[in-house]
Length: 185
Image: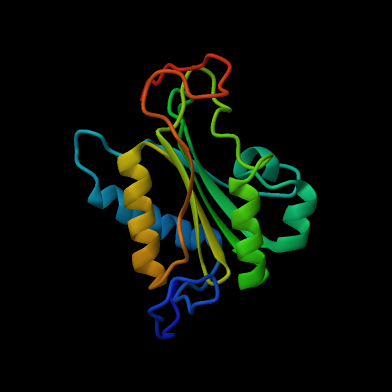
């Protein structure tokens, strides 16, 4: 069963009780299915490939150094757009505990963390990270997808900490982007 029967708390701190339980890949699959169902047919979610994150791939996939991954992460999975013309990545990280989840969230959103401008000729509209208990959700995609993924994560978790939106692209050229401003999705 993906979710434990623990009661959900009313607060929004990282230490609040989360209903999430199980491997990140299983929970991520559930969240993505719920997200697909909630999106309009016109702009459905990009087809994605789910892969396991390792210490060797964590910097590129979820914005954590290999050392941070080894220190804070129990396991992680990421869904990346199957077609490179979509700037789309949804990651779910199971931290060693709630304190590690808070540290992971800060590192992903901080300088040297997740690179929202890593794609060639495309950028996500929004990049956010949020935690619940020992789980951290990274949502990088179109605005509607990010909002739907966070809503599905919140529903599954019962309670989440404060969302950290660390990248927003609304057209033009984002500050510090080196001139890359075309969005194809």
